Length: 131
Image 1 (cartoon, one colour):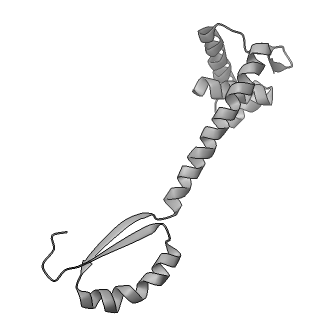
Image 2 (cartoon, one colour):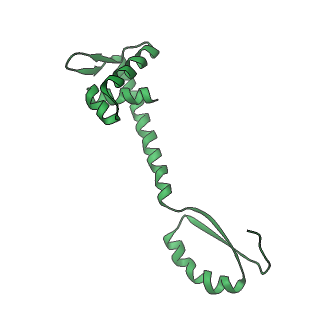
Image 3 (cartoon, one colour):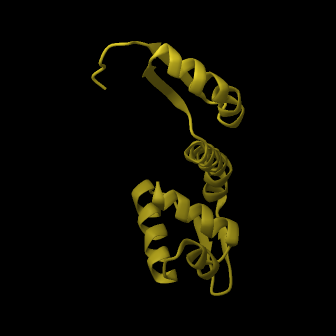
């Protein structure tokens, strides 16, 4: 997966130096990664000259088919990351009827407005509860 992401970066930037800077690795390490990927799949993906790097026909095909999938994966990971910023889940509160009426009921509308992804279950119990 990392090798393919490295390939996508080089193919888009058309430069090992720029792609390496974006990935936080050295151009030499990136070149070795691409070479190993090409050897593993048995197809040359990049045409290299002293001044230019461009995808070969196979490289262009791989770029067009795989790059959108990686973009979708990154997008979904970002969407999942948003969940950590918003509290969600269930809360169960066990209390007496008096506490529910005097403390909880008045506070619930504001709580639900602020945290719509949280559900609250209130259990009225006058006995001791093992939480």
